[in-house]
Length: 282
Image 1 (cartoon, rainbow, N blue to C red):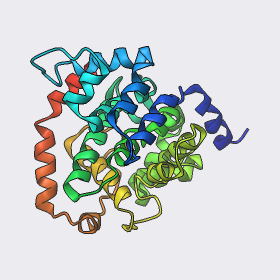
Image 2 (cartoon, one colour; image 1 turned 180 degrees about the vertical axis):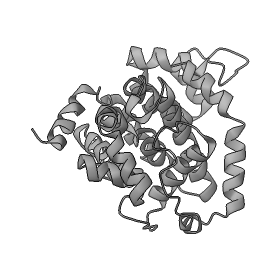
Image 3 (cartoon, rainbow, N blue to C red; image 1 turned 30 degrees about the horizontal axis):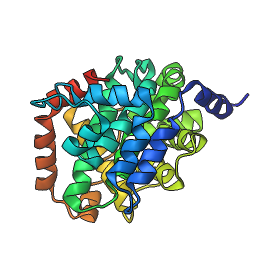
């Protein structure tokens, strides 16, 4: 069996994104949807409802009163944030362990996924990008390939590191050279296997600018910058974290300046404790 075939087979070890998450995202992207439709969809899933209310009542939100129903959650948090929480909850299970091949302790990849998703949403708001759920979900799931690749990267780490240190490869390029596929490509294969939209697959595949700096896709640019902010903040930085290239041109493509980026970094740095409280509620 080829290495790529073995990697793709490993996808079956992941827990697929539940159908309810995809249904909630589809409703949220429809301008005709009202909050009652989303509330009705969620409230008939006891597991999602229970976990959602637990999150809403966590230290992250620090509410003066308890949130006791999905309807309350939508009224207090707003539909956008509620949808994001549902997607986060549905994606949590696959990120829980350690990724030893990447030098990531248990929970580190999940912290990065949540942080990247929140930063992507905030960036989308800053640049006036309307489809915030799309970039949020892409940023949350873009590193799912690492869950599968971790063992293979660990077994071939010296060869990958040689290409990075001695021949000027980025870590992603070295991964692809040695394994035949990189983490972003594999994550997009996962998204396809799970039945996620073609658009979402594209954003996940391009989250590290794999075909070189092409900046015409605003959503991909937002996800990319969010990932770079996480690296700058030291969130989820494993053995590969400093072996990626930052394409500064992407800031201009989004209408952002270096000062804007500094503000995003500083602002999120103040939220790290809140993010840890949120993660602790899963």
